[in-house]
Image 1: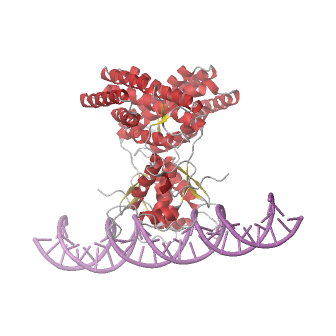
Image 2 (image 1 turned 135 degrees about the horizontal axis):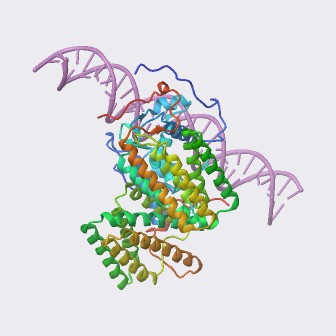
Image 3 (image 1 turned 135 degrees about the vertical axis):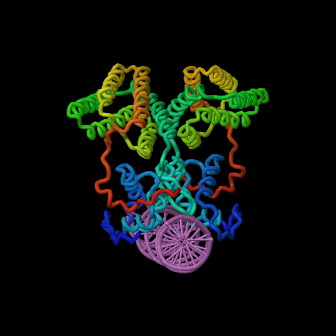
Length: 254
Length: 254
DNA sequence: GCCGTATGAACTGTCAACAATTTTCATAGG
DNA sequence: CCTATGAAAATTGTTGACAGTTCATACGGC
């Protein structure tokens, strides 16, 4: 590697003596973001020095952030070789769907008992927006709204652990080698399920809400399984703005 | 604090140039162990320098381990004040029970389809041992076997994420200010449930196994809720061998 | 030409040190 | 006697350096 000069010092007004915040959350979120956008793909090695330099800090905080992300399941570490973006197998991705289904079911049962009008309205709005996105064949928007809706449903459970846990599982799915796929035809079916779920919540029918939410995720699992075979799926998630800017292309060795 | 000299340098044959392992997992497990035994209780601050010195290393690896444990939910960090052993509220503990119940249900449904003879035998053995522990009124042994059985049940799901997730939730419960309690009278009821669960698995009846396992955890939740009122519960988990050896007594400030 | 080897660069794991901040403790004041 | 004040001590957040390991590339034998 011919040392690509100084890449644009991306962020962070540099001189800052007072300690009003830690660097660690900053880099942690930055790495999470890079994984989320696909800027960092599975198998990529994290170059601590380069990343630290790019963000204008030393390797200490970077390593701490990587250690945190390792526990989050987004990175893995290898002795003397550093941190790598994790890559999950098909089996692990499917396992993840099962866990998400179980947590979603729990969320549904809990939420039905306590959901309030305001929350129901928010859910209605999201589902409505998604209907519009479907009408406009706007897959990217649908993808984003879908994530927002799922997050909102979890939030309605008012279960702290659930709310903490769910996004990390969601993020972990992004590690699968073929990332968040959306089958255009599935949007209609999917949003019909959303309608039914919100309706069950409105009726305070926890058993039904739980069951529907579980089946909703498992339906997603089935779709996911189907996309493994066919190549016609569309990438819903926004990718890296410019793939050539990623200086983290070292892949896992054989 | 009058600087308690050098406390016994607990572990680690010190001089070691070749890098065959990282320090980080070592301290991470050490801190986890200290929390598990109650040597470190909620609110305690982690003194990085002292801990590093005691284990014969520098603060770098210690901080990385703390960062990891923060993500695991066992520690929390405060800017310029360092890491503290987390303390969870009653609400959070109850939330945890609900999540555990959901994951257990998932595990049961999954396990029923794939559990094999060897695993069933192992489960039978554990339940049998627990019956003996009950007969001998051996609460400590029952506590340990109970944990082992639950772990084994999760393991039978063959779901990687579930297997990864469950112990951390279990550990987090230990952070509750009144730690793992066992009501002597509940052991019989609890093990009857275990018998039923194993039987459902033997019949490959996933729906029943899932439902029983969920209810088993929720029954635990109910017992937990009851112990909050009455003080007659018995500490099942082994405590610190010698409380005076703990130099981590700084509690959270007002 | 291909494969094992060796040499140098690149990078990780750890440490020791420094500045900023918090905590402690003694002292003065009400 | 209790509370404010302020300086010293302790502790954190971060840095730069060093030794050990891995990676890349050139070299030599076959």
